[in-house]
Image (cartoon, rainbow, N blue to C red; front, side):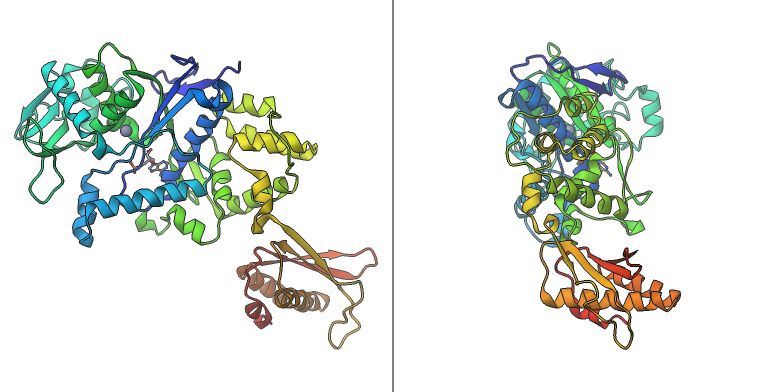
Length: 491
Ligand code: AMP
Ligand code: ZN
């Protein structure tokens, strides 16, 4: 059996992965808070842990892995969104949950085996909080229930910090009822206009961290294998989950391997609303960036490195996927390349796996390429059927065109994907003629300008010299739905 090695945040080292029960490998990943569209950063853990899920299913068998990812559907950000918009919380969370599922499906992510919603597990959260109080790890104060961090000696072990460091570094909410400023909320009171549940401490709602402890316990047990999420969750969220779960169920180990993806950036800078480079997965899909392309860009960087989203990477990813899908084989079952598996088994080295797929492509090993790409979540046969990957090629007959008013006889080609209308083909051909005429006349400034303007409309102009010495040019169309009238208007 393949040996999987994973970097365990808790150990700060790569470790050999040994599941508690190879017949049921269990993984929990922290999911989204549902009040808005998922941004591109939110998609990173989804794609990364989807690859891990696929690898585990490959190694242990599809029926022997349980993957749980939650929806946080009770949160003050959701309450605020409801207040701003005048819509109900239920409407907002139901709509956002469906958006998330649709957007992640577009990225080729398999659905986890269970997707619990926090609001469905409030009784389990209350029961866990009661246990924590009974064992002296939590206390009620000022209508709140707080976890007493000093009651758990292991607090800070995951992030490698002392409680003093954490107090100094974190923006902890100082409240008069807290015994220690690091103590965190398990339960808080709700006024009549906020969502609330009856509890031994009055009507209220859970703090954020308790939901993951309660849901993972209910669905995966007191000890399970892998817990994942973005690196921003290590502290305080995962540190708090550990404290709650280990104290409520000291007989269990809680999660044994902790995995965290690094953050996403855009063109070298942090993605943020104020920098104007903030976008959602849906924004990209709507702009015509394919889900597979987004997935490819995500996987071309190792998950423990900061990842940069750039338009150039998306362009390259699209080109590679087009190439690969052109070599897609019909039959491919059971032909997964062992080097691809080995690469993924080495702490999800997706970059190495992609390199290996490129080698398979170069050797024209079609069946193996198709089967192995599937392990990374790329369905090449399906991609080959989509408009953006189906190539067409059109070429004027050599000498058939005479550029107007000259004896100039270029060969002109148009290549693209997904079919082309006659109007778009003719507009592209005439555009190449105009460009070649500038080049023939050594009018480089106009030639460059036209090339630039064409590029902004989705047409790349390429020149080459045919064997007969005649200039030839090709228009490479980015998409099949370009506007011919705009191309015709270029001078
Ligand atoms: P949230 O809805 O903010 O709790 O985030 C949902 C998931 O997305 C968590 O696992 C976060 O760690 C992860 N995440 C949020 N922002 C980023 C980012 N910029 N890059 C990578 N992962 C992120
Ligand atoms: Zn969580």
